Amino acid sequence: MAGVFGFKIITQYERGIVFRWGRALPGIRQPGLNWVNPFSDRLRKVNMQIVVAAVPSQEAITRDNVTLKVDALEVPVPEVPALTMPPSLTTDPARNAPLNGTPKIPATV
Image (cartoon, rainbow, N blue to C red; front, top):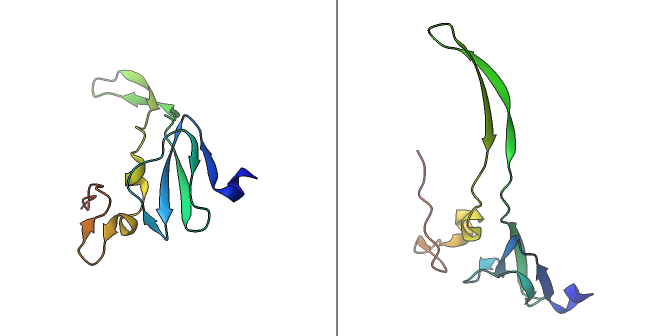
């Protein structure tokens, strides 16, 4: 029922980005009770939790015939919510300049 009036709850491990008519508004919504205009705004929640993924152990043989067993854990760093949006939403196509003060994401080769 609260969603009808525009109140959105963001949990401690989430951050929110508000889109108005498809464009990101400046700033990031922090955890707690937030109000967004239910007619023109959309709130996208981004999970900021660190997720640990186990990599299966592997055995390797070195040049001097020593057998090694390697275990690993992958710990990705949480992304900045403004950078999780596609570049088409964060840049002004007319000027090819960043909107809302977000850094421009360089193209990788």
